[in-house]
Length: 210
Image 1 (cartoon, rainbow, N blue to C red):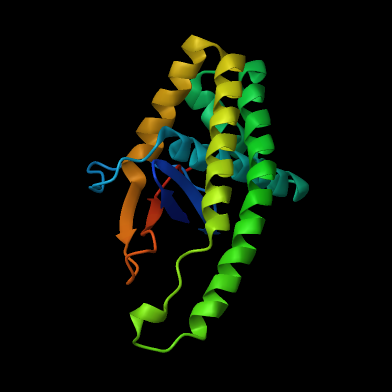
Image 2: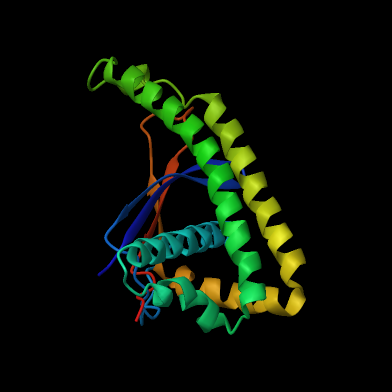
């Protein structure tokens, strides 16, 4: 089965962050597509790692679910570890950062979600067909964007220091090869000049567990 991660990215200067994530289907792992979708926007390595770390957590959750049903979920839990050739101790460092980053980022995402919901409610009250009445995005989103970007970079720095240079390079190669080809960044222009554009970062067809 194919699973989809859809994220809304707010661009503020050089900062890119991913807000809102929906997942459909069971986490799967597939080989990188023969032809990657073209994109005019460079996807930061932190965004690739964001999806990777989230998928590690999802695979562990699926493994736990199967175990509670008396089934073998080890293929889910060990998928990336086997691909990387990491020992239990090495991959435990990856798993810990995945869990920590998920908890911390979810807190920021929850704040952003509340702001976005309020903004949509405000838009619903505007006069239809009159772009001049559309307000700019709330400045709080740019602030959360910066916090989220800083948090991601901090977690990645911690992971790299924990793994060391050689294992960090091995992990980055896997993340870029398995996730990079499946990311497509799409421009979502808003009708008023004062309002920054939005980008959608779409990740499709990632890892099928055998």
